[in-house]
Amino acid sequence: MTIDIITVVPDLLESPFSHSIMKRAQDKGLLTVRTHNLRNWAINKHAQVDDYPFGGGAGMVLMCEPLANAIETLQQTTPYDAIIYLTPDGKTFNQQTANTLSLQENLLIICGHYKGIDERIREKYITQEISIGDYVLSGGELAAAVLVDAIGRLLPGVLSDETSALTDSFQDNLLAPPVYTRPADFRGSLVPPILLQGDPKKVEEWRYEQSLERTKTRRPDLLNNDC
Image (cartoon, rainbow, N blue to C red; front, side, top):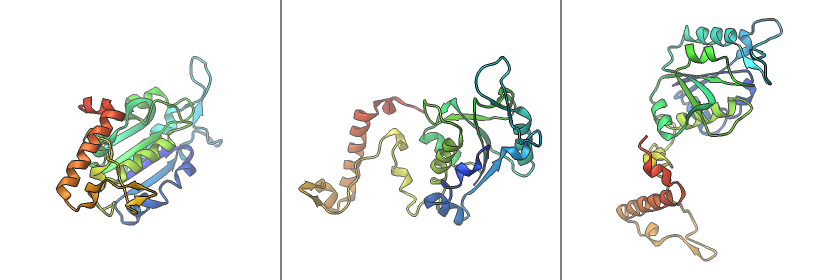
């Protein structure tokens, strides 16, 4: 999979993709992440990519011309399955969306900044708008890192144990069950005996029951979510 990211602050994205699972995914050739500085398509020698909003008001807006030129330049060499704009008014990102996007070959992510991007870019180029939550960040870069991590870890071969992703929270709209490791007795607090008995079927049943109960208690909305 190839994920291209258009941003005005590419340095913010260096660390998230240079360590841990995302680094290993790229080292294995399973994932390619490329960041592109929008200022490379600036409209003048001052590297301008934003301007004041028509109608007045605070803040700046990313302009049409730099974004259109950036998108069209990248499209010349890469056929994108989706062009994603990260915005607070997009559809809330969830595990099901991550699963769907992980099946694609090429994604382009547009990071908003300031007060956002000109609406005409959204109308002409964007195929999917995503929010990572009901709050506002300084820009879309951290949200882009969240998307790439959530999608990239689902690619076959990225995780050493591919079944691990299948038992994560939000798969099948359930939260993950509690987990334990050594020692079995930590200061008098014991691991549930069923996990020590060596019966995989009973363990699986216990984990499902725990997932269901935890979801009922903490996120009952997920049990009514058909998405």
